Length: 143
Ligand code: DQA
Image 1 (cartoon, protein in one colour):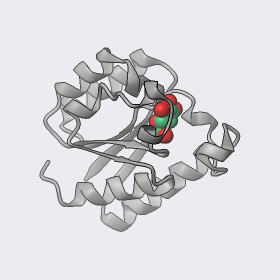
Image 2 (cartoon, protein in one colour; image 1 turned 180 degrees about the vertical axis):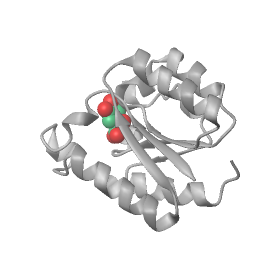
Image 3 (cartoon, protein in one colour; image 1 turned 180 degrees about the horizontal axis):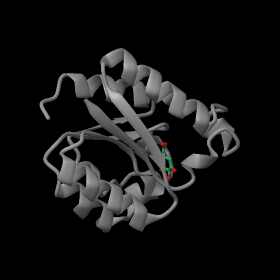
């Protein structure tokens, strides 16, 4: 079964980006972790990252059309992108919102997720394990 792991802006800079918050694992290593975890769970995982809202919306349309389950780290788009929310609302397969950090413990503007209300569920605050846990969660969801 195919799963898309989609990542929003600045996540391509993992490894060098604010390592005290996001850790020192690079984005390339994160891709490897997702592919390995996916393979263990019987998923064919494709990981993508973009800084472009339009591109991310396009990927969500693709997932909606194909009924592909999604693990999504919307990054900063989480907090303000109604376009992303509306794209997510169109799908029928599961979509799990994830974050490396726990936004609820951070700045006030991160406490709002405009995505959470249309996601199947949210996993936040476990670093790379947020990705592993989300892939595991997909194994027990109908899609
Ligand atoms: C993030 C949290 C967001 O608030 C932030 O804008 C990010 C990363 C996380 O994974 O912890 O870019 O989604």
